[in-house]
Image (cartoon, rainbow, N blue to C red):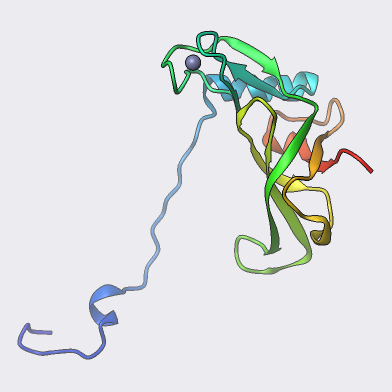
Length: 158
Ligand SMILES: [Zn+2]
């Protein structure tokens, strides 16, 4: 279309159909590699602690964000965490309705920066911030060194 012509359809300039291939590989890095090996081999959930300022992170980090020093100390997470936020998921990543809604949450641990976004093993009606939860792991020998080795987080109390 020449510049002297006008269109009343702005999509003609801003949209076009097509597909872009975007394959990539994301490596876990040294700290996450150690985290996943301990999870797989020993069923441990680890964080990292800065020896200079004492801050602790989960997932573990290799460098302190505050001091910029290398972090060498691995520490076990408390057995129980607390749900900071929840979300009920009713469709899969492609928009297809799920047969059963899933509950996801952001789980934090006392004394640690960060946390996990993971499945909560509860019904949507029980989803709420402040819930105390515990990780439910796959059994020994069934873990592969992935975040899915944690089946989810279940309420810690009655
Ligand atoms: Zn520090």
